[in-house]
Image 1: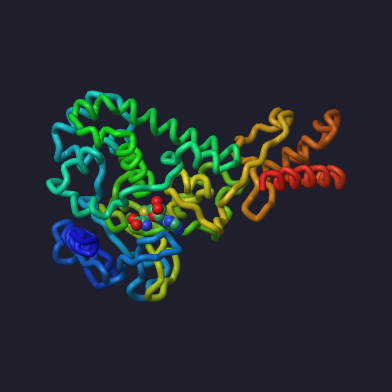
Image 2 (image 1 turned 30 degrees about the horizontal axis):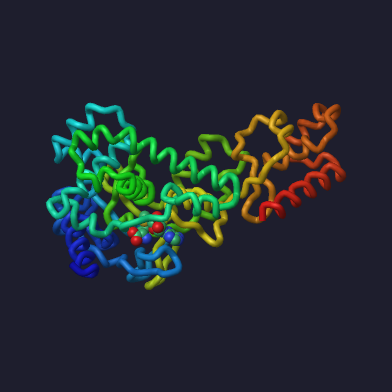
Length: 380
Ligand SMILES: C[S@@+](CC[C@H](N)C(=O)[O-])C[C@H]1O[C@@H](n2cnc3c(N)ncnc32)[C@H](O)[C@@H]1O
């Protein structure tokens, strides 16, 4: 079957499931929430169409008319979401086998996805599977040469850790795949990487399963970084950060209407690509979870090697000591560097200044900035 035909079949399948982007049309809210009304109310390509954006994520969603910031642009009913639960509900053998083993929720979804894909055209989800990419470029799929080409220690470490973690998860799930009598192709590490990357790059958060859900059509949104707020300011409490990160996502599962709903994050003109913020990520994290980087990522961070005697001077998490994308050191890095550059016998008396983010002295500031600048030049 041609790609265009597969896409057409998928869109028809999605429409029949009640996935809809024609939501500003005047429909009584009670009527819209009635799950039996999908067939009559559902419509696609009224707000969004699938297009190709060569320099911004490849295949993505395009505005077919002007869209207003905050407007509901896509609604995917709960019944159209693919989760471990829905896959097991229709496959008794799968649910029996999975229940015998101790697996994480992501491992369960990975096994369930491979099991379903292995059914080929017999799977109810087949029209959707035809739209999954056949391979990905995430860190866990890098070979040794590609890992070394990353050059920076933290990037190499992240790639090795990602590969190791994926291998461990795969090995500990082989028993269940054997029990399910997977063919060698679906048992392979390559297949496991494909499935786990499909999960890491295409699933959306749902409150009832930490592995998330596959959301047909909703997973065609490409990514734009959130940039209107400095989200991870050190002044925020954990509760503030949780509330803010919730607000960052433009897609959310709404329990009362039993649907995944997507809202326009900004105004779009006809022909613009409609983008989604998956969250706040550095480029290394984007590479690890989604297999791409942004040339201009406002949330990027760089880590530089720090003096070993600095670690006893602070109690912040290690990952708070970094250089921002604009070249400025993070609040914590600057504070601890100022303390480190102070003679030992004076450290106690200036600690409060350093922790408040204040300059300790001009001389101290020059030592800190020269040291950081030298390390940054070396890293570059
Ligand atoms: C949720 S899917 C989005 C739809 C995807 N482009 C497709 O064709 O199915 C996420 C994947 O799209 C790609 N992607 C999303 N946003 C991107 C961007 N801004 N730049 C490059 N690739 C992007 C990455 O491959 C990522 O893993």
